[in-house]
Length: 332
Image (cartoon, rainbow, N blue to C red; front, side):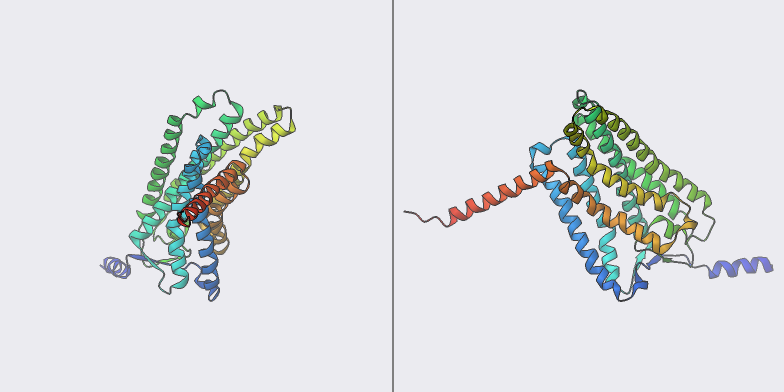
């Protein structure tokens, strides 16, 4: 009888979590206002940068190639990816109540992971595109036809949705009771799963396997692609030819190193090793810096994109001057 009574008392004292408290940067006190200004500025730059890349790719016929097709999708995905995280984070920097409902937390994690995994897979596909263009230029139109590009892009999106749905289901099928303080600025896997009031080893192992599949496998694929590219570049006799071939890969390689490096540091290790302050800094890198890096790297290092931006801006400028001239022309 006593055992039964004790069980009833324990059950009565357990509170099922219906909302989470996002601690975010609350420990930084007054610095939060400065962080709000910085992150708001970066968010606006991310939106304008990615919007510029997407618009220029659509408007310039010379950029209607597989490489820029995937870059446009990557920019679109990263725009939505930041939209899932940054507006809520900015709101929390100015707010005292930093709560998020259980359902909204699950939805945020689903979309964040969905777009993040899609980006990982897209970067892998972009690596293959560069390999096909440099190592098999004669077969490139067939290897990367628009039909193939469409199927690869769809596969990246579907893969992102399936992997994200699997992970979110594993995390939120766990019981959450009493503890509801998420030591992060959004609902990420490790900070949330640590709050579960049961053993999470099996769930964490399956999540780790998912992490290996979406991070290590595409990264290995990119490495193999670049080994083939390097071997082909070394066979090019002229230094100018080598430079041109490598310049088409430099932007992609820069984004890959930052994106995969940060994501691997966070997700390819046990939850028990989660260190909030250091990990939060790394998370800021791949939730803010990487989406910022993508348009900056591709616009600053890529001559085709630079030329396209000038052409688009030049057309707009000439149209404005024509309209101004027409409106101010006096009849004889």
